[in-house]
Length: 357
Image (cartoon, rainbow, N blue to C red; front, top):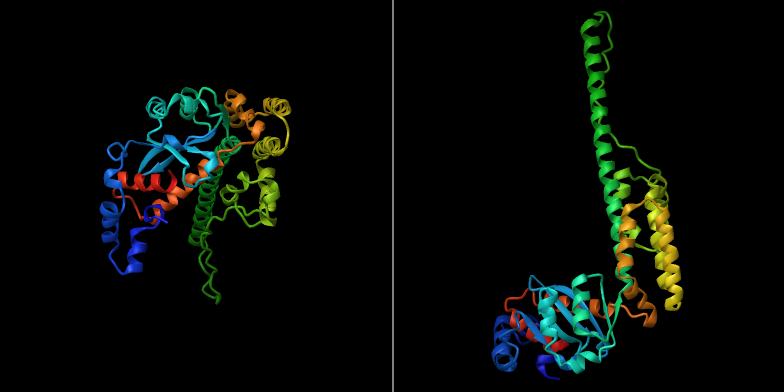
């Protein structure tokens, strides 16, 4: 296997051959690889294009590379292996990214039948402009994630209120302790000790405030803090402690329980193996349930889902997700971690193109 196809770091090679990693990297860059003659070297900082990798099913996503956000178009059929990367473009502006992707011949772009993405408006504009024949599918994971973000904002709001309530209770307790201390001092001043009395007076010190502890050992603030992961998971994944915590949480904050119940219902729709029309009926039933609730955060998420309803329902055609793009992003970040940072962006993108392009 050619050396430039291996995702090895210079440090790893250097340790094997007992040579300094920096020397190996320099030698690989200027002598072993074809980086110096790479046809995309001059513009690699801004964009890299591998038009030959385009396929009928694509994914588009954004990721952080080299301290900058890059838009990555990938071929789903390659499953994160060689031939996955079609384009890597710096930034997320629809006009800039579309201009680069449109360098791919129109005939090739017309063959793309499906493209998956998240809720990003810029990604949606890019897909519409570059792939006119493609069915746009918004990943079901990001729909549930959007709703969970609404629930998270509610949790944080209740946590802030609990902290404020705790501070007020602590201040009131301290004030009461101060009043009791003054009363005791007044008593000692006006009730002198009997000289014939041998025993001493018991000194009563000020007490420290202790917040109310719930049945599972948490305070209200701790309960809300430790419920973060609980609210993003399905109930069947909860352990014994999480079930007890959820019971207390939903008893103290019924709105969180109502919001969580609505999220579970839409999660159940995506788990069912149903056709697009049936999914649409169930989704509209869910809209009606949200209308009856009084949770503005969930209603805001519902409006966001309504605005992209057709693209969301396209999931039920082939049940396609954006998992391949997320997997590719994870592999690229793992490769970046192996390098312990990036000193040369064009060379890093050259290696990414060599491994995944």
